[in-house]
Image: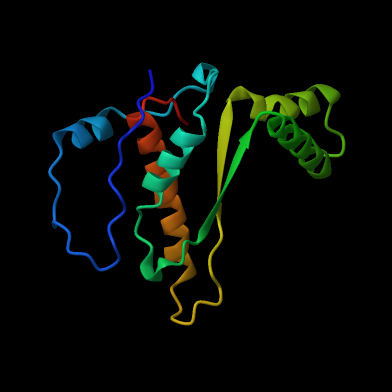
Length: 159
């Protein structure tokens, strides 16, 4: 059964923080974390409160100059069918001779999970301090990893 974390408030910018946070539980979680096979992603998915907590935790990543160089789309319900249509249309553009069976399979891909969090790397190309694009992309990747760890720690399957 998923747990709802009682998260502390975010620290104020510039607030003094302890330099380390020893946590055997975190080490155990990291040692045991695995992506869940897609076939095991069943209903129900996380609700709004859990998604909010996951995203709040995920955003605690290295992000120099607080650029937040990512966007997150929450795709659930009927929107998964629309995404399947987009997948099929993209496949048809890439491969005009694709079979109807393969197009049907593309349409079903987003229905394998009750909720999809799509993380889009969105680097700030106009950063006046010129944070390298690769650094912003790595920050987006770190957000993805934090999402997976947060979901797992809260009792949700994730891949």
